Each structure stands twice: as structure tokens, then as C-alpha cells.
Length: 230
Length: 217
Image 1 (tube, one colour):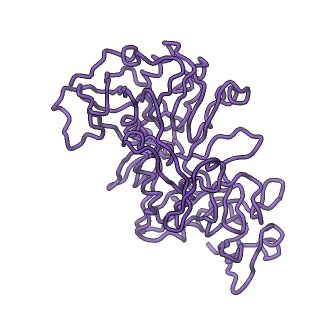
Image 2: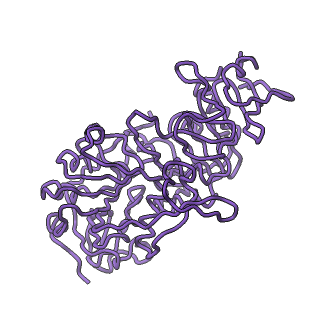
Image 3: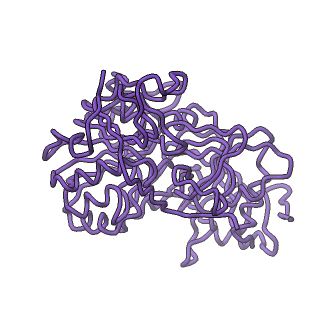
């Protein structure tokens, strides 16, 4: 089934004020750069964004924060963003911090048709407040629920017009689980090919999870911590 | 006293052949520099890499290949990439043999606080809560006291907890201690540090018994 849309603007059609979006990536690695820029341009606001991080001031989700388009961030770590901090302290922005493995599993559960699960992560901490506790194998676990989101936006390395995706290196991170979890999933890829050109043995995300796909352009792939061996 | 590098060097002696190891940000990262020659240790980075190699050369830099500290890294023969759910599956199911973390505070029950200071900007716990809740073998690398000279090895945590009863060993600038049901058990002293120095710097219950070794390099 051909799922190709022409560009990012077309891909994000239907995303409206107040929606919950999953946005793939770890730091600035593997983020859907083209779709984020299209969201900025669209002016959509009051978004809830589920994403491991919140970008930096002038890149990634930071661009949506600059435009005051985000009402709430659901993340595991948000440390690299001055504008984020300003909005949080002034009360313009809500943040919910979630252990990284729980964040990943809540995405996975949403995509796997599992409404909730138990994890030991966060037991005894403020993350556990108000959550059901049960003992399995002598150890205390807390119940965590699958995320609900309207759209998931992911970035892959290669994809075909049927929506099958292959990710590259550590740019994979949260993208495959989020791809499974969106009511509507948008994938942007560096290289879009015809069905049959990707080896079925090496596809990470089956196209059944993807609703819209397009080939992005001008990927900047900014590096947060450029660290080299001299 | 031990420097940060020496704390890492001492922790590296806890590595065993065949270990899968997750190293946190800061001093723990330095442990990778002291893996004994010929020992097969595989580093896990929770953003989705097993078999993390050294930092790249200028020519090798790949923006799609980073570690959990968002630093550019490389792969090694046998490296593998995976998604974040798979990464924390490894961690939660106990496949990672050793986890080395930094801490703001540890108490005599092995509870750890390392993610939040009330009144300051909270950046988040990242993967720390998942790691401490599941890892069987956690070593904490830390300074024994804070900048004001107050103990960070306490009876009760003053900061919000990251995980309960999880720390088994602490290596500080002053000493090596095991945490048992009895409290902080002093095992080794850093060069030039006396038992009384450790006593003065440890607020939690300190047990000084048996043969206390000197840390030698």
C-alpha cells in the first residue's frame, strides 16, 4: 500500500492544537528534523510531546518550545535547554519526568496492545506516587500504563513506499516503539525506495505500523557532544 | 586521597572477563580507560549500543553514533545496535553484570539519591531509576563529602531517592566500602588517608573491622 506523502507539511496534516505527539530521538540523534520544522511553521500549539529529551535551544523540540507551542513535555531528561528551563520556572510549561526504560516500555506497550505493565523502576521514589504496587518474585513493582498519543513522528534511515523502515546506528533509539504506538504514525526517511529494494531480513519496523512516509531533505544531524580521539 | 582517575582505576579492578558493563556519566565513564589488558569487557550504552568503542577520530565521526552522554563514539567488532525498549530489557532482566554510577548521596541501607535537588532545575533521571532498580551489582563512584565538607554517606538521605537498597559498594576519594545489612563496612583506604578521616567524613554507620587494606596502584 502506497503511503507516500510529498513533504513534511503534507505529512503533519491533521495535527491540531492540544494533541499528544510522540517524537522519536535520543538527544538530537534520530529526531524527525523535517517534521519538527513543519510543525513550527504550522503554528499548532498546546501540544503534549512525549520524547526522551527536549532538544536544545535552537534545534529539535527546542524550536517548538521557542514558538511556545508545547504545553507539556513527557521526557526522561531535559537538561540541555535554557528556554525550556525558563518556561518551566515561569509555569508556562508542564513537565512529567519518567524513567527512561519506563518511557520506552510505555511506548512499546502502546504499540503492542498491552494496556499496562509492572516495573521495579521508580519503586519507593516520587515516580511511584499514586501507582499500584505489587510484589512479584519477592520484589516490589509499580504499575505503569501504555501511553496514549494522537500521532507518532519518527525518523528512519531508509524506508520504502509501503512504510517499511530501517534505522541507522544509535539513531534507532525510541523510534521503533514510537512508530508502533501512534494512532497515526508519520515516518520521515533519508532515503525512500520502492518495495523490494529493502531486504525483508533487515527491516526493523514493518510498514503495517506506518501511515505516512516521506523523504526528508537537508538533514543537519547536529552533534551535541562532539568528542574525538586525538 | 584518590583523584577521579584513581577512583575509576580502583573500580576497574572489579571488572571480570566476560562482563557486560554499563558506565554512567562522569567518573564512571573513566573506568573504560582502565580495563585490564586482554580482558574481554563489553560496554552497554543505554541509548542502544552494546560493544561501545573509543571516541572517534575526526574522520570517523558519525552523528548517528553516540553514547548515552550524547558523545560521539565508535563501534568495535561484534558491536550491536538496538532500540531503547530492548536496551532496558537487558537492564531490567539482569543481563548487565556491573553498573557504575555517580551519586549525590548514599545511605547505610544502600539507598541512592542522584537525580534531583529540590529548589534547583530538575533535569530528570534519565535511565538511572531503571538501572538502580534492576542491576544486581552496582558500584557508586563519588566524592566522600560535598564542597562544604558535609558527608554524602548518610544514615538517611536528605535528597529525593532514586532507588532503594541497591548500592553494594562505594568507591570514594577516601576509601572503598561495602554496604551490608550492618552499614558501611570499610575495606580499603586511599593513600595518606587514616581510618579517623573516614570516620569523620561518614555520617552513616561505619563498621571498621578486620584487615583494612591500602589501595595501591
